Length: 400
Image: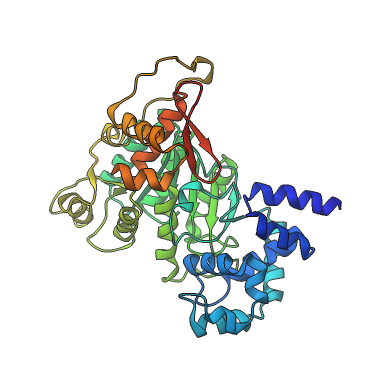
């Protein structure tokens, strides 16, 4: 009974639907069982984030996926015989248990997609990974999150602009996210640390190694100064080329906005920018000389309207509508709150519809993901909006 009690609390924290929670309890599951199946799901060939979530939904829970008959799995829309057989033939539970021992030994947290500590922004991405491995202390759901990417061949100009932008945004206390690669990534992490900001590196391999190895001291400094390392790959996963586009989608999905500092016309930085655009994130690019090969990608993003021009930190502040936070002691609810025109748009939707989902507000307001996030955060800060479970919002009845 005691274990059941703690499991009920755990499932409640995950916002697990009652039917699934009941099935888990009825079958006598413990938290280790849940983690075992969560890890196993990510190791099935051909099963990515979208497919995994679909399987969980149709099978009534993560354990049901492995218990379901092949004939039933085949009938799930979009699954097919190949994936159904991959599920039924999965026999790597010894490897799964080895991974469980690894994350326990190294104090790594496994964040499942319906866990409250899973990055909220990434939940809005349909292809977001179902399971993340995280080591560190940085808050992944921080109020303001900025991703910074660019070329591995950073120039003195790129270093200067990276330092300038992060130093200029320091007063907003954003979480800085990048990929711990050579060049712009490493410079962004270092600039964040120099400004006493939390910074998280997203890896294209398991947490049992650091790649490139020369960045290991930087990674250790990030961990020791309140940052973190994040991956959706199990340990022993090598930094193979095909892993980095998967890594890039996490960088794009974690943040409110993405800044590209020096990039060629092809490569990982532009891939990340395109992913960020597909997620309705604001993308910024630092312009450079037309003759500079590592400015051509940034100039192209600006020219094709895929990125905002970012000459200074103020350009980013203006688009994102970032304002310096007021100390908590100075916050007071007001009887009459002055709203900006864009804030009025969201308030009117909430007034007309009552409890409303974040996705509905994005799709109906015409605002981007990041702008909607900023507006809702400002409204919450003013005491106008309440955040409800399940990514729902409503007006604060005390004021409206």
